[in-house]
Image 1 (cartoon, rainbow, N blue to C red):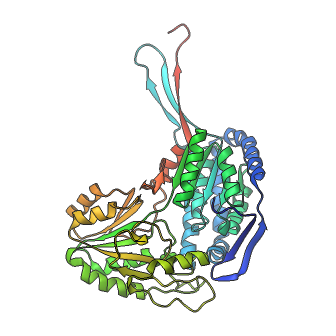
Image 2: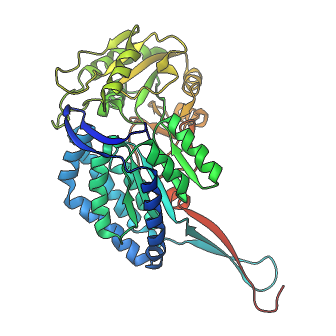
Image 3: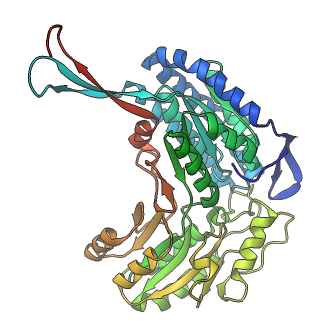
Length: 460
């Protein structure tokens, strides 16, 4: 659900002359038709029972595994994901489908005693019907998987509207899913804002990942209809480095979180906050670590930082660093794609774009803090609250920081990037709206709870 388009076009960001997809956008009526077909197919999918759904999701995992090399290569070509990361994403997607293949056997509710008299009280979770899924381009297999798999496991049908830039990946993923599922249960709807808006207007439950601006509109539209909605909308994530941290290790982790996949992750590190005397050593180590990051062709297994998704994204990164004190930020490789060198800046003035907006690229600001409390205040000062990494050898200051940080996820002595798909994922403030994704939280989101009162005949 991005910019309105009349044509769905997807190009290789490492070679913009390479067009993967260019087709007419299907329009709003196609979205309504897809949802109606899904709505017709959903009761049979649910009635088939836990064994059938479990087997189908397991078959999807097997199909993805058989096509793993092809899928990784497609992610490299369509969204510029470095090959090593693309392979890891496909492996994660396979694991997600296997994880949720067991979910149909999970308990659906609980049995309770009545307060007085004979009878039973039951709670039971039931699917909503059709889940409308709006997904971004940066994780073209994993994010659709972690939305679709739990929705399907719970007995919903799904209609997936991917970002135009990831249309080819979404189509290939859907072709593998559709082989294992009854017709109509899973449908891919290509397109832009027109199709996305239409999907939100007719689906029974909506899950969105993307920009804050679009996410707000999705939440508003879904809320006005009274349907459940969750929206993951990015972050302005900080890495806190305390004086007792292993500075070299912290620098490696932070450099990877700044520059990996050219910083095109909602969990990427955007601000590096050095506490007290950590500033000098960290500055030196982080500059060295960023300069060592391999930037280049995403098809090269050694590449860590590939191209930006398009020219506009590359230009935003360039503008964001203009006029600032640049500590690291070499020349981008002389390749035909949309590249930007990993960049670290300091002495960033208050109110600067880098301290209030998510610039989706390999650029971060180094900020000093007097002590841990000051670092926490800096971390919490932005409108976002997705993930924070904390680097320290001591347990007490880390635990203190954990209590005060206003973010949905906290990673200790680890990069801010990285997802444990069996645990809840999501953020605070403008980073997220609604229930968490992934793990058991996802199964709860895609189902509604009902309470049943069972009384014997003749009782009140």
